[in-house]
Image (tube, rainbow, N blue to C red; front, side, top):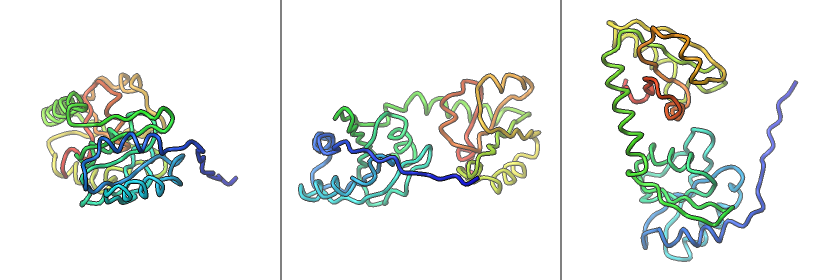
Length: 215
């Protein structure tokens, strides 16, 4: 059986939200434009509008799941076109640049800054400390295609084991993951997530992302 993927394009006019977002952009700045697949075919409209108003713009491309497109280093701000806060917060965490989120469904605009993710950063630091002081580590490996390589994958797992030889590692494979599943392994003191780094946000028990260990 073949799996066929069909792009779900939206006919919603993105320009009211883009015009509203323009007020949040710095004059004569350089902006990278990213969006979800529903609005991908209309990003050129946004770029033309910005350039007509003396803002240099590059199309970075599609935000998919926890994957952030390559953002040009020259970009000073990022314009995200799509709904919700999950993706724009993910872009900010990856780039540490101001993200202006423009929602075509509501024409509302918001700015993601360091303050919005302050609590998340505190949790991240706490998780790292827990990893360093733990002896029994569970490594979470997704069986979904491409997921284990999101954060550097298999090579980094081996590097992790070599670097922390004093710790005992246990491998756990999963397709879908719920917080209650981890309660079945109370002897694990800290988990290392090798799949989508945003999984970290949904789990209160000690969990650190593989990319945060700087291997």
